[in-house]
Image (cartoon, rainbow, N blue to C red; front, side, top):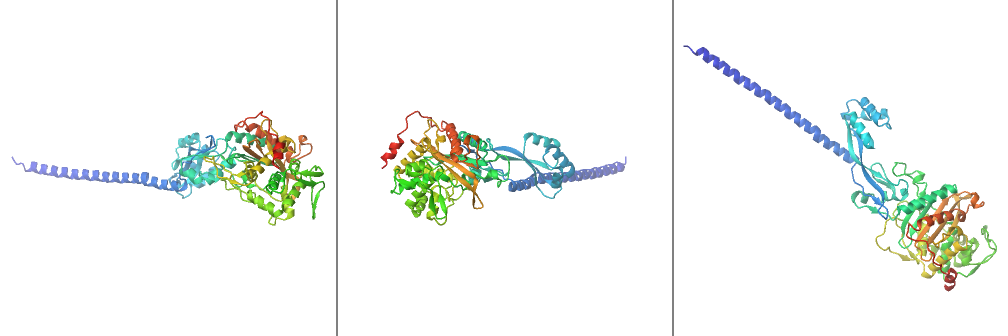
Length: 549
């Protein structure tokens, strides 16, 4: 039988099978190549583009954990909480108009036209909204919008809102410090997890702010400031400036609410400056508490006339000059010591230097370029020279700290501060006695708080506008300390343009407004500062003065 046909058929089938296998291998190879290309492209999109986005995000918003700010007892003043922020990659957006409508339906505070304009741009990255709530995040996710992404971020939070705003300061939307402690210690807060402990006591701060606000409301003042200092260390226990601001809300740092009256204002102290003038008198070695000066009539110097408010029209001792707040007597003390010696003494105790704590916003003292006899006389009762409240309380605290000056601080001090002597122990003891007598017998009886042995001195000064004094507008202040048997805490309070009320009997001077407000603060914070009211008999202050001779 001839098998050639069968052999040919087998040969043809064999060739066809071989060809088929080649085609299958070719198709598989093509699919494999396409698959590898697809994998490569997906890797490129998912990895390289992600890196590119990450690089863009890192340059726009570097996520850095910011350390906490705490009060002296460990209470949180400022902390950072995790949030999410929404951003867009416009080149990934399929339909800008439709996407904008969906976003605006969820984030109702955003303008749809503005969003559409953003999404239509050629930029690689755009913020849509910072710090979304969890509900907003979920609602945006439910929309399923291509090109919209979330970034885990941080938001700076201040649990007590306005309470410590001027001291703690605030951050911008990127968590960068822009004022206060947040700005001064921005680097350390970002680089170290260790919290910063302030000298502020939140409980005391609340009481001081509350009473100051009540005083502003009672006397219809424009604003006010108050500061409490621990005398032995210079630590600022409370610092309040009103009006203030909520650092949780991004606002213009140049707005008036951001102005810190405690550190940044320059205010004539009025009769509070008589503390400095009296201290100078004793330190001169020429004058004792019983040295008398003629205060029978107004003092005429050239075209200037110095009057007393309700003057005694008699000779007054230095003790009486401070007790009755005599401008005439203070001016005569200044003349007796001399203008040059007065300036030198004011320099010695720190009144002519810049007094600053950690804050950047501090005011230089203002004083005359030419310190003449006339300047010396007006400065003796607090006119023609101006300081910040921080400046005044710091120097007064140094006088009461047995004559040792501390630099003020907003940080909790771990070690004993470095001090320098500015006056003698003897003079310090005399001023303590005179400040107490001024409250018990003098012009500041409204400062007395039973059990706290408060001493102090008020001051009223006319405000200035364009270099002219305003007769119907003034600053009123009170500087004091407690207990005067061993002064532990000092306080300075100032009201900006308080008005007359029926309770003040037509007066708008400090003894009628700033002084009682300060007394209410001392009454509230005494126990908080672990200074309990005492029922012990007071020293014989008059005898302390007599023994000084």
